[in-house]
Length: 322
Image (tube, rainbow, N blue to C red; front, side, top):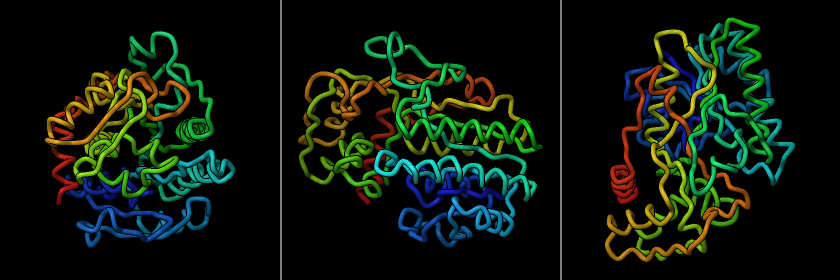
């Protein structure tokens, strides 16, 4: 199968591209820039078209050129508080443009990468200390601009699924960690927030100290980026019609920040890694720490994460040490 990956040069997109190639499929990338640093090892095996998802004409032209049977839509603007208008244009308008172009090109399926944030802050039994699993039919209560744009994009996606022959699905992920996040987003300000779990491994692995002011007691559903890529490819390439239009991707049992740090210390002797007590290690100011119900992926596709915490951290360490 030929698959177009929007945002295929990004942190998650790069691993999706590798997963699709490893499964023997052809990959075309639609990307706003030509920075191939995260896919240097496979860049000669893909076709890259530089296009802006905000420009409907460019997206139509790129999709026609790449001629995919399926589209994985990862292109997104993440630092939404910094520029909400840009976030809406990219995340919502861009999704509409990708869907319209897919319809015009007679693409079979569009898989959209959404976020657990559409469920809103984890309050009551969904939050600390119980972390009850959240199913896909859980109410969407988006409060902040990033999940607001993602929820709106889901609605746009589903509208195309209802009114055209396009098959669509939104995938909502637990907190993703793995190689590339710190390199692409940095470790300060907003980058520190979304790259926290990456910083906790990569900086000690490089012999540098790292301290998390608070959050040792918080548990979170963490999913390794290679499992994310595997899950996306599984849905995008599924031979049978999809049974649902939304899928959670979980890493399994929630892991406390203290346990995550302890696993890193076992892996990297002498690691100078400290975590203070309390909750909210990412400093988000709201309890976006949760556990997703992954039974739908398991039932429909037989999908389970391949990496438990120990195996994921070992793989992660080995990759950043190269």
